[in-house]
Image (cartoon, rainbow, N blue to C red; front, side):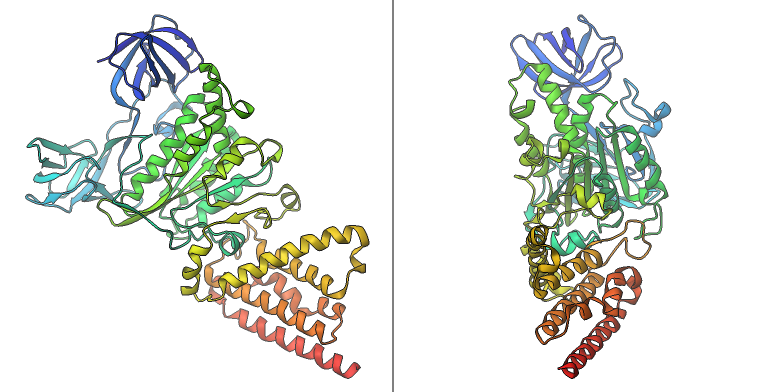
Length: 583
C-alpha cells in the first residue's frame, strides 16, 4: 500500500512527499478521518491531489494512503428512487441529509435475485447473468465489462445481499472469478460497448418547440443556456418528467441549496405518467450543492454519466440532466488556480474544452456488450453570467453538442414557457429524424418545420421595420404574416408546465395541431389574395379556437382537430362569399 506525507495544503488541493507507488488518478485516503481524494499530478518530488471532502483540520505531516486503483463508484441494483452526493454516497444515510466526512460506503443491501445462466454456460463481458427484483422495477445483473468465462456455479433464485457471490466463472486464465450484484467502476473511464449506432429516433420530450423545431436524438446531446430567471431548472424538471427515457439521472452540480431542495421535495410528489408511481422511482438524483466541497462538484458530473452508462448497459434508454455545467467548470477553474496553472480565457484552465468534449462524447446510442441496445442522452444546462452566450463555457460547449436550446430573458419575462428562442436555437439532429416523423404520420415534417422557422424569421424582420414606420403602415400581406406568427407563438409553441392538458404533447397531437395551424395560414394567405379584408381574418371565431386548441383538446380527443379544420374551412368559405357579394 502506497503512503505519503502532506507537505502543503490549500483548500481541497494538497501536495505530499512519497517514495513512489502512486499513479495518476489513483484514489487516496487523507488524514486520520480517511477523507476521499484523487491524485491529479505525479512528479519525482511527490504527488498533488484533490480532496473531495472538507479539509478543515488537515496539516503538513498528516498521512496519505493510496487505495491501489482509480477513483471508482459502486454500481448496484436499487439506485433509482434515491438521492446521492457527488461520489454516489446516499445522502439519506447521512445526518441532516448533508455530506459527512469520511463516509465510504453503506451497508450491503438485499435483493431478490433470479439467475438467467446455468452451470457450464459461457458468459461474455457485460452479459446478463440474472435479474434483480427491486422495490421500484426489475434490473438486470451484469457480468462486469472486463470479465468473461465459463459458469462454474450459480446460486438458486432467492434473496441475497448485493456483496454476496451469485455466480462463479472460470476465466480463460484458469482463475476463478466471483461475481456479485455490485461492482466498482472508475468514473473517468467510459464503459465499453460493442459499437456506437447512428441516430435514428428522437428523445420525445412532449415540448412542442423542442420536438417539432429542435429535436434531440436518443443518444444525442443538447445544451440549455440561459441567464438567471430564464427557467433552466423548471424546464429540465419538466423534461425529466415527460421525456420517454426509462431512467432519469439528475445531477445538481453546484446549484443553490434552495433550488436542490425544491427538486428533492417535488420529485417524490410528481406522478410518473408512464407508471402512475412517483417519478422518483425511476430517477437517480445526485445532489452536490454550492456549499459542498468544490472538488466533489467536479467529480459529480463524471459520477452521473457513469451511473447513466450502467443503466444503458442494461439495454435501457437514459436521460442525464446536468444542472449546471457552468458550476462544474467553475470548480475546474478554482482547482486550477490553486495548482498555479496558467489560466486561459476568463481564468478557466486551458483544458476546459477537452474536459467538456470528454463528458459530452459519452452520450451515445449503442449496442451493448450483452443486453441489446441502449442510449444515454445528455441535456446540460449552462448559466452564462449576465446571459452572455459568448463566454467560454457556452461557446466551448457549442462545439460538442448537436442541439442548442437558447433561453431568452425577454420571453421568460413575458411568462412564455418554454422560453426557448426559435431564432437563436438549432438542432443538427433534425435531418436524421425525418424518417422517424414520417413513420409517425407526418410525411411533411421537414417542410412544416422549415415553414414555421421561415415565418418566425420573417416576423422578426417585420417587427424591426414596424418599430420605425409603425405596424399600421405595413402592407396587408406583411400584417398577416405578423398575425400568423403570433398564432404560431401563442397557439403552437407556448405550453404551460402547470396545465393538466397541455404540459405534455404527444407526437400525434403535435402533428394534428401543426397541420391545423399551417392550414389556417395557407387559407388566410389565399383569401387575402382574393380580396378578403385583413380585419375580417383577424376577427374570425376559429382563430380564437386555434389559439386555445392546445389547452382545449386533450390527448384522448385528437380527432377534434378535424372539427376545428372543418370550422376553419367553413368560415373562410363564408368570408370569400361575402367578399364576392361586396364586389
